[in-house]
Amino acid sequence: MAAVSTVSQDILNPQLQIEGSARLNGVLQVSGAKNSALVLMTAALLCPEPVELCNVPNLTDIAGMVEILQTLGVRVQRDGDRMVLDASTLTSHEPPYQLVNSLRASFFSIGSLLGRLGHAKVPLPGGCRIGARPVVEHIRGLKSLGAHVTVEHGVVSASVPGTKKRLKGASIVLDCPSVGATETILMAAVLAEGTTTIENAAQEPEVQDLANMLVAMGADISGAGGPLITIHGVDQLHSVSSAYPVIPDRIEAGTFLIAAAITRSSLRVEPVVADHLSSVLQKLRDCGCKLDIDDLGITITPGDIQAVDITTQPFPGFPTDLQAPFMALMTTAKGTSVISEKIYENRLQHVAELQRMGASIRVEGSTAIVEGVVQLSAAPVTGSDLRASAAMVIAGLAAHGTTSVSGLKHLDRGYDRIESKLTAVGARLERNLA
Ligand code: EPZ
Image 1: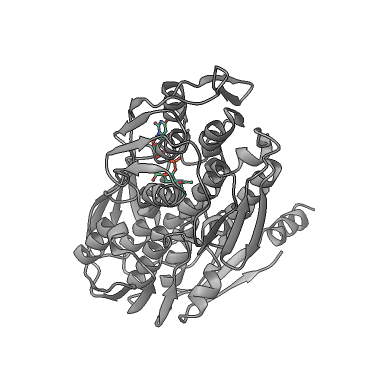
Image 2 (image 1 turned 90 degrees about the vertical axis):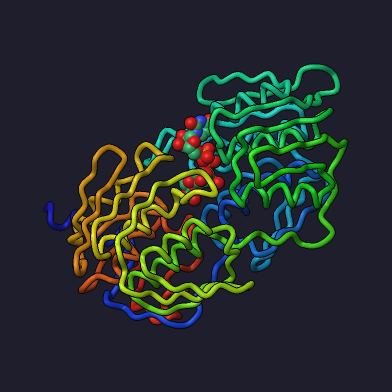
């Protein structure tokens, strides 16, 4: 009986079958940034008029965010990569527990709800496999702006005392340059009375994209993208004059450049804003890849791949979201690579899956020591989180044999049509549906 139940379990779990030793060529198209689009959608809550976005990626996380915003009374229309969000009449300030739990970015809506309505009740976002992911900085910032915040039964309740229900600008210094905390405080501060400064702010391009859209909506913000952001509160925001374009996804672009490197394929990736990936581009050069960079995109020509060391840091350092994909590349590099994960406490789970494919990796604390091998061998593997899943796809493209990758629900959260994009440049992979 056990055999039958095992078989039925496998069939229920869709997999990507990837034929290895692929040679890719052509142009890989990059979609809009997941981690920008999600927060831009929560920023629409601040505006009493419809806001239009374009270059919105087609991801399950985006669909999840649409569902959450609709429970708050936002009317959402999608047409391809365009999305119109009409938050003119909000009907609730409490996104539902189950939905927020599965989509961390929706917690950031506590900032825009508080700024617009003067109160918000948002469930704590679940920690996930890669770490505890606290929201201490987010709450500390809202309290500095004058909100009364309590946390009970897993729900964060925030309200602005007084009749005007308007937050007051404050000087805030973050303990750590948290991306979500910076974005949450930024959204709460744009309608506050007076001036807010955020020191030790996250400098990620997605923070800058949020600030740029808020400015297009009439906010008064300077310094975003640097460590000190200054916000002068305004009375109301207005719609953007034309559809606001989401920046290209730098993590998807980096994933594709690494796929080219591990398969020793010359490939073009576009669109890419090179400044959003400078630390990654440097490491690709250091390990033996030639990069031709123009305003639209990047053409990569891999050489003999040498081992290099990486340490993940807040932007502009090497992004933690590309640590797993880059480790996959280092498994077949010449020499020994030391990979240190400094952002999350538990983001080395892909090591065990890469070892299953013949990678030679030793883990000491939050550091992995990777001895390059000549070639990986195909195996059934599972992606434990979004970026680990991408790493397994990358490893499968280069391995000898056919690799089956499970855990596609993670992959579909952050990569828009990855198999059709890779197939279009010569990869041999297909999804076996449930
Ligand atoms: C954003 O998460 C991204 N997600 C993450 O991408 C990304 O890995 C992360 O930034 C870092 O770049 C979205 O934008 C939706 P953080 P966020 O708050 O905002 C610690 C992906 O794969 N911290 O900057 O949650 C925290 O524990 C995802 O696309 C505190 O200690 O990240 C973590 O170790 C994964 N206290 C580090 O900072 C706090 O109060 C980074 O967290 C808040 C955070």
